Amino acid sequence: MAHKEKTKAVAYLRTSSAANVGGTKDSDKRQREAIAGFAKQAGYEVVDEFYDPGVSGADPIETRPGFSALLDRIEGNGVRVVIVEDASRFARDLVTQELGILALIERGVTVLTATGDNLTTTDDPFKKAMRQIAGAFAELEKARLVHKLKVARDRKKATGVKVEGRKSFKELDPSMVTLAKKLHRYPVNGKRRSLRDIAGELAQAGYLDSKGKAFSAQSVKNMVEG
Image (cartoon, rainbow, N blue to C red):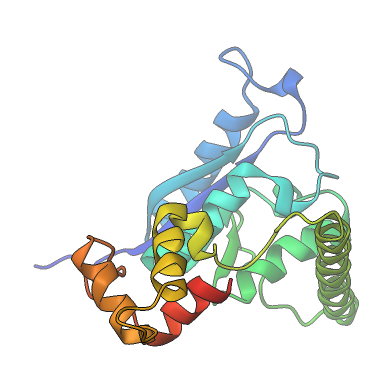
């Protein structure tokens, strides 16, 4: 008789301080055993584990290496169930806790506790409101960060330093640009070379684009005018 295939899941563990981390401590062991016991009983196969040792429950979700690795795994392999010992493993602070759960909900993930509670669905009006507040807070923080990075880029750009965008041809290969400008500057038999002629001569000199072909006329124009 064939056994029903178990649903794959990943485990998330967190210990709140360095005092709870180490071979003689049992916080992570307790969490691991609780998760394994629930998974076995409920028909889940725990295929991976992500652990944030010595991380305070007040620390922002996005700064936690273990949680970030958990998100990467979920996005990469299709596992859509996360099991934790209890909600406090995300955080003891309710807004931070809801931000973590919200990040998983947005990826289509079900979050279960070792006691069988589904943290991703709730009929509790207060929790629903908190989740909405957490979502708004996350958007506010994202907008603040984007603005902060833009201000920093603008400040650096004002000093003449290039801080964004593709590298110019001159940055990629100064000798190629020097040759292109020389070919453009000096005529042959009294006639100025066309951009395509310059591209052809660059190709003969071994200068090709990323596909191994002669540069386009527009690329050559960017070289000689840059």
